[in-house]
Image (cartoon, rainbow, N blue to C red):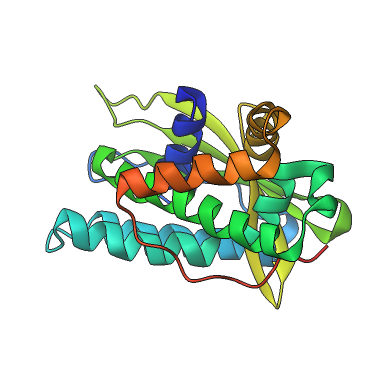
Length: 229
């Protein structure tokens, strides 16, 4: 996987659901809902995720393995890997067999979770501020955030602008794509996957993911429901 994609996946952990508080300095307050309007369900789900991640990252009683295990559970709960898998393959998804789809979701999810949990080692009091949200087509919602670095001399540098596309499924709001500086992670995966599949098809891509996962030594995640479109 390219350095850009590794950075993008790390941002899922060190971006989406990390601190909105810091012992060193108070971050900017997110704008209040207009006219006292209630916070959207999608935004509330993102804020709940922030709290869960923050509790894990700041728990000094956890060793690295315990922190990674707990983080894996939360990330798996917050991201709709079925939909993200479909978006990362693109139009070719419809041509895959059910077995190929299931195999890809398993390997892709395992790969993403492995990178995400390892990224917890790099946590350095970064903060994320939710600055807004907007409705999208198909009933989706985008949560707008700003990733802030550790305060230095009373100043917090903005590290990245990260937008999270969320969709409601089975009465739950989950992340289906991440845009970093306007670049879709699903689209970036799709471009790389198309290059790999150009010579060798889906079998070559599945083997590549399987080999990477085997080399990382990660455990196989529990299979989720097949992606439905």
